[in-house]
Image (cartoon, rainbow, N blue to C red; front, side):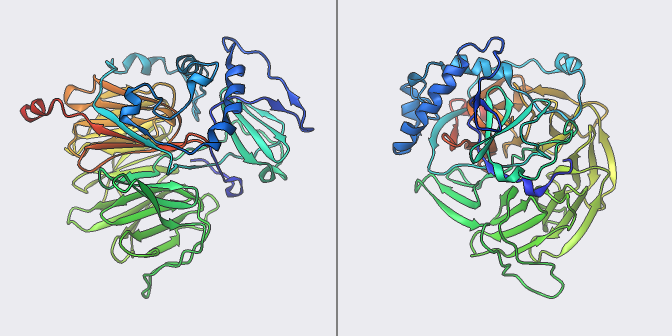
Length: 507
């Protein structure tokens, strides 16, 4: 990711509904008419009018039975609005602006993309709960109030700033952040959305970020419980000579992972926090770098070839750092030529996929850090990757709206290109048995592919809201999706359909 100012960080939640512009005096300025958007403004008005009544009522979950009887799975009251769900979906897909760092033609990629049959159902909707709400940290670079930068329009109105990203996409941010911003061109700068903020440790247990709290949701107990509050001072429990730990406070979490009783989180100022789930407090925490551009973009917990558990952190300072997962002693540090946005280790612990602010993805020896291969084909920066459990297939997600599949035995060209619906691919996950691959866009869509049938059959999960993360349960029986939205932020759960269990045993 490109350089940014940490002072611009704010927790914000998208409404996904258009708003009227306002000038610096607080006067409302009607937006200019836009092609094919008749009725959109009335939809937005109705939605805003509904906010008060919806929020004044108890927040109820949506069950599978209620969904079968016609209730919207997110509880959005479409029947009370002047806009149908179908009409709004069409408008949103048409007008959504996918962020790009590198501009260029996507026509050739579109032609090469795999032809997929949608409409399949591999995971059935089980429930949606608003008792826990995923949240995402957003940042934007060098704003100046009231100026237009490409598709970005910021204007002040009373105590908040309305940030217009697209005609149907608005964020609410406190105006004080931009008080001293200077007007300058931001066309080459970048906003980021990190999407690894949800992890399932079983089909009943999910960990997610909610504001400054790491939350544990139990579907059996039907309640959420705070695991760690990162707004308060975090004092590491583990102390021994040479351990570079330090107290942290008010950490804004950018990424997280939960594996084998260990929760690891990274922060927007280069923080690293490690906590054992069965112990109070944090075992280890530190700032990985004093670099101004320090964001921890990705963390991972994995086993090396000898079976020892390791913690890996990838940062915006173009470095990867590896720690022992028991002592948290620093083991290795690898440097690259660009900011590292994502890493993933092969199932045997020998290879490391390194993705970042480059069109190329690297395959690196996990023990030495030596680059062994370069994957070429993506048209923009990459943000997500995952290895098939078999160890031969690597999936990479990119801002060019595609997920590419690579056969590690022949990396001269990608094996297949899977296209998203409207945005970049920010999340990539395989089931532990390798049967399904899920890819998530920044908002609205999660796509599930059947790997056994060559990825040509697909289930499309169609929702409204930013996607904070996706996670299959280790036993593959559940898929969880975190939705970040001020009103309809929630956790959605899907259960694996087992009508073809007999066929599975035959394959």
